[in-house]
Length: 117
Length: 110
Image (cartoon, rainbow over all chains, first blue to last red; front, side, top):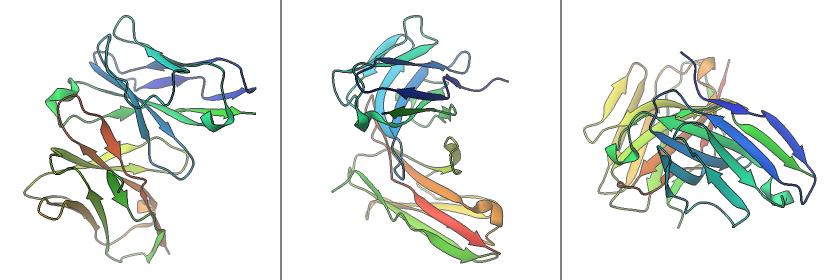
Protein backbone atom coordinates (compact mmCIF):
# COMPACT_ATOMS: atom_id res chain seq x y z
CA UNK A 1 0.00 0.00 0.00
CA UNK A 2 0.96 3.64 -0.21
CA UNK A 3 3.43 4.88 2.34
CA UNK A 4 3.88 8.32 3.81
CA UNK A 5 4.36 10.95 1.16
CA UNK A 6 5.73 14.45 1.49
CA UNK A 7 5.80 17.40 -0.85
CA UNK A 8 7.68 19.16 -2.12
CA UNK A 9 10.73 16.93 -1.96
CA UNK A 10 13.01 19.94 -2.34
CA UNK A 11 12.39 23.56 -1.52
CA UNK A 12 14.69 26.52 -1.93
CA UNK A 13 13.56 29.68 -0.21
CA UNK A 14 15.02 33.11 0.14
CA UNK A 15 15.56 34.30 3.68
CA UNK A 16 12.37 35.86 4.95
CA UNK A 17 10.01 33.84 2.75
CA UNK A 18 7.24 31.69 4.16
CA UNK A 19 7.13 28.00 3.25
CA UNK A 20 4.56 25.24 3.64
CA UNK A 21 5.49 21.58 3.73
CA UNK A 22 2.90 18.90 3.26
CA UNK A 23 2.63 15.40 4.68
CA UNK A 24 0.21 12.69 3.61
CA UNK A 25 0.32 9.94 6.24
CA UNK A 26 -0.65 6.35 5.72
CA UNK A 27 -4.43 6.10 5.58
CA UNK A 28 -5.94 5.33 8.96
CA UNK A 29 -2.84 6.23 10.97
CA UNK A 30 -3.81 8.11 14.08
CA UNK A 31 -0.45 9.52 15.08
CA UNK A 32 1.60 11.96 13.04
CA UNK A 33 5.01 13.36 13.89
CA UNK A 34 7.16 16.08 12.39
CA UNK A 35 10.94 16.02 12.76
CA UNK A 36 13.79 18.28 11.68
CA UNK A 37 17.02 16.60 10.65
CA UNK A 38 20.16 18.63 10.17
CA UNK A 39 23.11 17.20 8.27
CA UNK A 40 24.92 14.57 10.30
CA UNK A 41 22.36 14.61 13.09
CA UNK A 42 19.47 12.43 14.10
CA UNK A 43 15.88 13.59 13.61
CA UNK A 44 14.83 16.18 16.19
CA UNK A 45 11.22 16.00 17.32
CA UNK A 46 9.12 19.04 16.42
CA UNK A 47 5.49 18.19 17.07
CA UNK A 48 2.97 15.38 17.44
CA UNK A 49 -0.68 15.01 16.42
CA UNK A 50 -3.19 12.46 17.49
CA UNK A 51 -5.84 12.73 14.80
CA UNK A 52 -6.46 16.48 14.51
CA UNK A 53 -5.29 17.30 18.02
CA UNK A 54 -1.80 18.70 18.40
CA UNK A 55 -0.83 17.11 21.69
CA UNK A 56 2.80 18.06 21.82
CA UNK A 57 4.52 20.98 20.16
CA UNK A 58 7.41 21.25 22.55
CA UNK A 59 9.99 20.75 19.82
CA UNK A 60 8.99 23.66 17.60
CA UNK A 61 12.06 25.92 17.72
CA UNK A 62 10.26 29.24 17.55
CA UNK A 63 6.90 30.85 16.97
CA UNK A 64 7.79 31.01 13.29
CA UNK A 65 6.98 27.31 13.10
CA UNK A 66 3.37 26.24 12.95
CA UNK A 67 1.79 22.87 12.19
CA UNK A 68 -1.76 21.77 11.59
CA UNK A 69 -3.73 18.66 10.78
CA UNK A 70 -7.28 20.00 10.54
CA UNK A 71 -9.09 16.84 9.43
CA UNK A 72 -6.87 14.32 11.12
CA UNK A 73 -5.16 13.16 7.95
CA UNK A 74 -2.97 15.50 5.86
CA UNK A 75 -0.68 17.76 7.85
CA UNK A 76 1.11 20.97 6.95
CA UNK A 77 4.19 22.40 8.59
CA UNK A 78 4.52 26.11 7.96
CA UNK A 79 7.64 28.14 8.56
CA UNK A 80 7.30 31.88 8.48
CA UNK A 81 10.10 34.32 7.70
CA UNK A 82 12.58 31.53 7.03
CA UNK A 83 16.12 31.87 8.33
CA UNK A 84 19.29 30.12 7.17
CA UNK A 85 19.33 27.99 10.30
CA UNK A 86 16.00 26.50 9.18
CA UNK A 87 17.83 24.67 6.38
CA UNK A 88 17.36 20.98 7.07
CA UNK A 89 15.39 17.93 6.01
CA UNK A 90 11.89 17.93 7.46
CA UNK A 91 10.59 14.43 8.06
CA UNK A 92 7.04 13.39 8.66
CA UNK A 93 6.15 10.04 10.24
CA UNK A 94 2.89 8.34 11.01
CA UNK A 95 1.94 5.42 13.18
CA UNK A 96 -1.23 3.43 13.53
CA UNK A 97 -1.91 3.76 17.21
CA UNK A 98 -1.94 6.75 19.51
CA UNK A 99 1.50 7.41 20.91
CA UNK A 100 0.23 6.50 24.33
CA UNK A 101 0.11 2.92 23.17
CA UNK A 102 3.88 3.00 23.36
CA UNK A 103 5.56 0.60 21.08
CA UNK A 104 4.22 1.50 17.69
CA UNK A 105 6.39 1.62 14.60
CA UNK A 106 6.76 5.00 12.96
CA UNK A 107 6.70 5.05 9.16
CA UNK A 108 8.63 7.91 7.71
CA UNK A 109 8.11 9.86 4.54
CA UNK A 110 11.04 10.70 2.24
CA UNK A 111 11.35 14.18 3.72
CA UNK A 112 11.45 17.68 2.34
CA UNK A 113 14.93 19.15 1.96
CA UNK A 114 14.65 22.86 2.70
CA UNK A 115 17.47 25.19 1.75
CA UNK A 116 17.22 28.80 2.84
CA UNK A 117 19.51 31.15 0.96
CA UNK B 1 24.04 15.48 29.19
CA UNK B 2 22.06 14.70 26.04
CA UNK B 3 18.89 12.66 26.47
CA UNK B 4 20.12 10.01 24.05
CA UNK B 5 23.79 9.60 23.16
CA UNK B 6 25.49 7.55 20.51
CA UNK B 7 29.04 7.30 19.23
CA UNK B 8 28.78 8.85 15.76
CA UNK B 9 31.51 6.60 14.36
CA UNK B 10 32.18 5.84 11.61
CA UNK B 11 32.73 2.21 12.38
CA UNK B 12 34.63 0.69 9.47
CA UNK B 13 34.50 -3.10 9.59
CA UNK B 14 35.33 -5.84 7.09
CA UNK B 15 32.65 -8.07 5.68
CA UNK B 16 31.87 -10.95 7.98
CA UNK B 17 32.89 -9.09 11.12
CA UNK B 18 30.78 -8.67 14.23
CA UNK B 19 30.15 -5.11 15.35
CA UNK B 20 28.30 -3.65 18.31
CA UNK B 21 26.92 -0.20 19.05
CA UNK B 22 25.74 1.22 22.33
CA UNK B 23 23.31 3.99 23.04
CA UNK B 24 22.89 5.61 26.45
CA UNK B 25 19.80 7.43 27.65
CA UNK B 26 19.42 9.81 30.55
CA UNK B 27 15.78 9.40 31.61
CA UNK B 28 15.37 6.38 33.85
CA UNK B 29 11.61 6.48 33.24
CA UNK B 30 12.07 5.65 29.55
CA UNK B 31 9.71 2.91 28.48
CA UNK B 32 10.26 2.00 24.86
CA UNK B 33 13.39 1.60 22.83
CA UNK B 34 14.02 1.06 19.16
CA UNK B 35 16.77 0.84 16.59
CA UNK B 36 16.12 2.52 13.25
CA UNK B 37 18.29 2.30 10.19
CA UNK B 38 18.85 5.26 7.88
CA UNK B 39 20.55 4.95 4.53
CA UNK B 40 22.28 7.97 3.04
CA UNK B 41 19.74 10.62 2.01
CA UNK B 42 16.85 8.29 2.80
CA UNK B 43 14.26 8.22 5.54
CA UNK B 44 14.71 6.20 8.74
CA UNK B 45 13.16 2.74 8.85
CA UNK B 46 12.51 0.57 11.87
CA UNK B 47 15.14 -2.11 12.31
CA UNK B 48 13.89 -3.60 15.54
CA UNK B 49 12.26 -2.83 18.84
CA UNK B 50 14.27 -3.51 21.98
CA UNK B 51 12.62 -5.57 24.66
CA UNK B 52 13.62 -5.96 28.30
CA UNK B 53 14.51 -9.58 27.73
CA UNK B 54 16.56 -8.79 24.65
CA UNK B 55 15.61 -9.86 21.18
CA UNK B 56 17.16 -11.30 18.09
CA UNK B 57 16.26 -11.02 14.42
CA UNK B 58 18.57 -13.00 12.21
CA UNK B 59 22.03 -11.47 12.42
CA UNK B 60 20.83 -8.64 14.63
CA UNK B 61 20.57 -8.74 18.41
CA UNK B 62 19.29 -5.92 20.60
CA UNK B 63 19.78 -5.70 24.35
CA UNK B 64 18.48 -3.36 27.04
CA UNK B 65 20.34 -2.66 30.27
CA UNK B 66 18.06 -0.60 32.49
CA UNK B 67 20.47 -0.47 35.41
CA UNK B 68 23.12 1.21 33.31
CA UNK B 69 20.62 2.93 31.04
CA UNK B 70 21.85 1.79 27.70
CA UNK B 71 20.73 -0.27 24.77
CA UNK B 72 22.95 -2.12 22.37
CA UNK B 73 22.80 -3.47 18.85
CA UNK B 74 24.97 -6.37 17.73
CA UNK B 75 25.39 -7.22 14.08
CA UNK B 76 26.98 -10.54 13.22
CA UNK B 77 28.47 -11.56 9.89
CA UNK B 78 28.33 -8.00 8.54
CA UNK B 79 27.24 -7.55 4.95
CA UNK B 80 28.02 -4.68 2.60
CA UNK B 81 24.31 -3.89 2.64
CA UNK B 82 24.48 -3.23 6.38
CA UNK B 83 26.32 0.01 5.67
CA UNK B 84 24.06 2.73 7.01
CA UNK B 85 23.50 4.97 10.00
CA UNK B 86 21.88 3.28 12.99
CA UNK B 87 19.63 5.50 15.07
CA UNK B 88 18.74 4.78 18.66
CA UNK B 89 15.23 5.88 19.66
CA UNK B 90 13.84 6.30 23.16
CA UNK B 91 10.33 7.10 24.30
CA UNK B 92 9.53 8.13 27.86
CA UNK B 93 5.84 7.38 27.74
CA UNK B 94 2.48 9.12 27.80
CA UNK B 95 2.56 12.04 25.43
CA UNK B 96 6.24 12.72 25.84
CA UNK B 97 8.28 13.23 22.74
CA UNK B 98 10.16 10.49 20.97
CA UNK B 99 13.89 11.15 21.10
CA UNK B 100 16.39 10.05 18.47
CA UNK B 101 20.10 9.75 18.97
CA UNK B 102 22.47 11.34 16.49
CA UNK B 103 23.14 7.96 14.91
CA UNK B 104 26.15 5.69 14.50
CA UNK B 105 27.53 5.33 11.02
CA UNK B 106 28.59 1.86 9.93
CA UNK B 107 30.66 1.21 6.84
CA UNK B 108 31.21 -2.43 5.90
CA UNK B 109 34.27 -2.82 3.73
CA UNK B 110 34.77 -5.60 1.13
